[in-house]
Image (cartoon, rainbow, N blue to C red; front, side, top):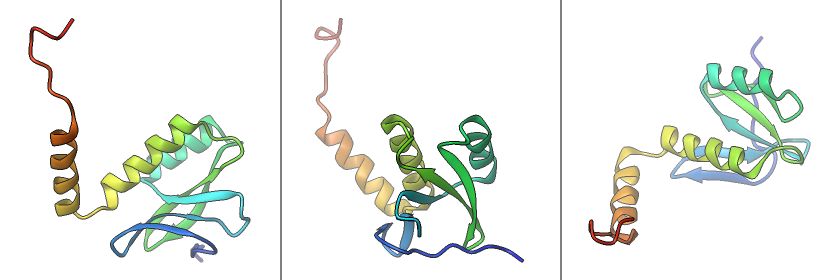
Length: 110
């Protein structure tokens, strides 16, 4: 029988798609990931990451918030956003980000 995880607390979503949510323990975050990435993280840092069943047919990574590095959490959440956000939202965001970034000409680059 397949374990299914449903949100027990706050949910971070884009549109109707869930990106991450607080686990039932109140101290971990559940994030849909590719199975191979989740397994790799779980094996590399078992205190920080573990697999936590599935949601909507997608494997879930449990991130123990007390132990995760900010940079790792940021990377995982950014990847979840890229995997789950509608393509039109991603295009509009990347266009806005490009407009907001300062442009340097070749003379200013060192």
